Image (cartoon, rainbow, N blue to C red; front, side, top):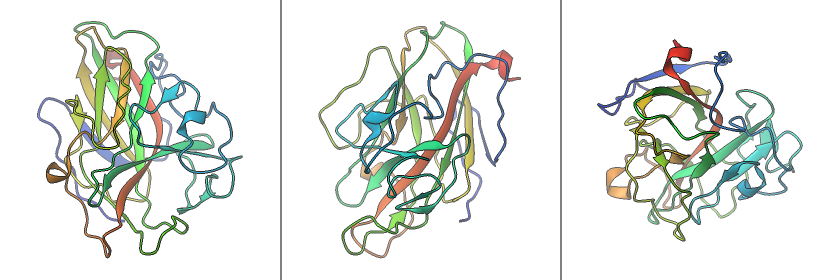
Length: 238
């Protein structure tokens, strides 16, 4: 796919590059199992609960893809076609927009330690937009792209019995529609207030505040693969 350079929320800094390299540093990553390598092989979609140290904060059912998963949830081949992991042999997937339903999926991780007040951290993750779904069920389903992929922090674990958007204020959100099928690096700096224990990723906006590419049917959804999430102190990232 093609994409334009994204705008960013004014309070954060973001870069947008396609990369297949590991930008790791010697600093400790505060996101345990940020590459989704640790978990139980999935047998079907909607089995994000098989990923160790991650949870779904709502009723939205995020997905887990892994090299030893069943054919629909394998790596590199799965129901969306072929996609290798950015790093390792596993990744996650989530819906950021559901046409007419405001359906959303999220991913939640308990950080390895509470963030330190006034400290600047650098958060990095990689997303990829599949341009088709070979076996999504139902006639006419198609994959589109949206904006507003965001990151929220919480002092307590979020567990809301809803399928629609979580009413939380993102610390960061990408304002442009991301259409690249290649792994795309998103990174931003964040100054902590000292209460953050959980990191959440998803679209925290309702439908009127979400933009998306046009689709040919009324059953389309915006979907992204996600891999290699990290959060380190910014001095280590420099």
